[in-house]
Amino acid sequence: MKQLAYSSGVVTGIILLLLMWTACQPAPRVRELTVEIAQMQFVPADITVHKGDKIRFVNHDMVAHDITEETSKKWSSSPLQLGQSWTLEVTGSANYYCSIHEVMKGKIRVE
Amino acid sequence: MKKNVIQLSRPLVVASFLLLGVTGNAQQNKGLTDPEVASVAVTANQIDIEFAKIAFQHSRNPEVLNFAKTMTNDHNAVINQAVALVTKLKVTPQTNSLTRQLLADAEKTKKKLQSAKGAGFDKVYIGNEVAYHRSVISAIETVLIPQAENAELKSFLQAVVPALKTHLSHAEMVEKMLNK
Image 1 (tube, each protein chain N blue to C red):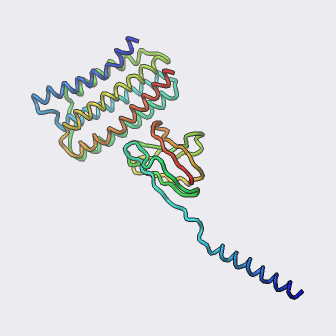
Image 2 (cartoon, one colour; image 1 turned 30 degrees about the vertical axis):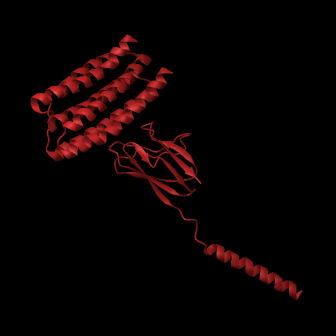
Image 3 (tube, helix red, strand yellow; image 1 turned 45 degrees about the vertical axis):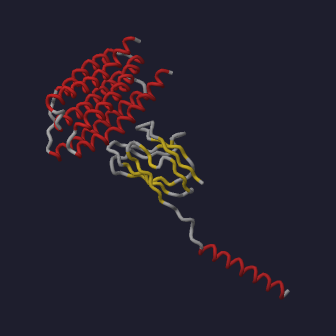
């Protein structure tokens, strides 16, 4: 009986230690990446990220651009004027384009 | 078909004129001055806005209307930047024979656009946009950029070219859709 109580105490202790260790671990680091919009192109046009990362799109062109998910228009920025930026929190892989200049395209790959 | 060929060739005539005109000018006046370059650049943008206005009146096609909206917004943005630059440089755009020829040709094109109807209008408008952008890109790359003396004006013209090339690709994409 005494042995059983001792074993239970050890197990509980281990569980508590594990919980404390887990709590002390740093959360997966969210990266912030940048896609420049310059000379009518997304640079880089193909970017690989982790889920939860943030991508900041910055417009350097004199004309306005937006960033729109291509397949089902799941997400879209408002038009960005020269010098303006917009940040996307990545939830999955996507093909995107500028709906103002439909030939401007980019790709986000989640690994 | 023949009618379309004639309509689409108009901007190419403009480009040829630009090239020939500047060659003529170069011999007599050592090329365009910066105020003349600025005038031609601003006029070329204004003309495409005028074409877009006619598209808003005549077209019901969403792709054509979206293209016309982009032309209006982009060319206005370019004009605003050009005005800001020439104001900073204290350059007053100077009307010249090339500006006048561009405007005269644009009037003829506008008459053709005004007389086109329905889906026929869409094809004429987009076909003209393809040809117009090709000729303007050519004129900027081979005439205006080499002739511009001020470094900032030259750099501004170089910055405009990618936008015009994107417009051309966009127009070609819409043209393919219309021809399906």
